[in-house]
Picture 1 (cartoon, rainbow, N blue to C red):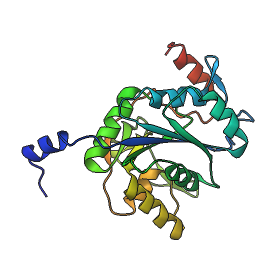
Picture 2 (cartoon, rainbow, N blue to C red):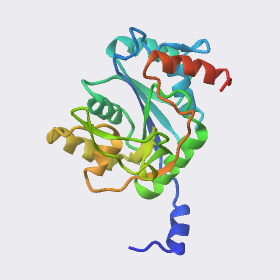
Picture 3 (tube, helix red, strand yellow):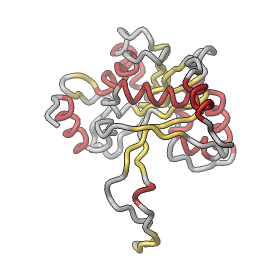
Picture 4 (cartoon, rainbow, N blue to C red):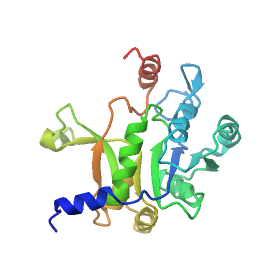
Length: 240
């Protein structure tokens, strides 16, 4: 169906549905060389605190659920006790899909949109959160992305199979925001079919849905390795 100017204007006028955030911080940080990245300090405060604060300060987020490891629940609850939007801190599952599903279950029934965010992305900006939530309010599924700078090769057995055109490639960040019911259905279907899910968007894409991509932010990095943590220290001090 052709989208007319009038249709676009109507979409812009849609009332913003209640949005909650599920912050996923339940991984074992296997590439961090023994560093517990969620509790690693960035400019003298734990990473998870910086991440949660971004959503606490967002005008478009009403509730926050934090999903973490069982052994960190009490510690995370204590750290985030000053944030009134935090509804629950729950234990994650065996993989990301199970952890996200646990977080979704802890949201209240009033929530119609949900922002799924990596706990290890502590530099997400208010602008990225806002425009992704508003895009999902219109399109039911949205995520921030940034253009890929490097040439990407598809490799199999150490041999290049193909080289996708770089102009079509984007690196997808979080938060990824969805209609709650659509995401729940997509994740349930993925589990039943034992489908490999690389991110939450891929689960929704399996339903045949399109995901709206909005402008991301190069500062919205994911802390995955010790080098990333060093970069985060520079970003926190605004050296970069």
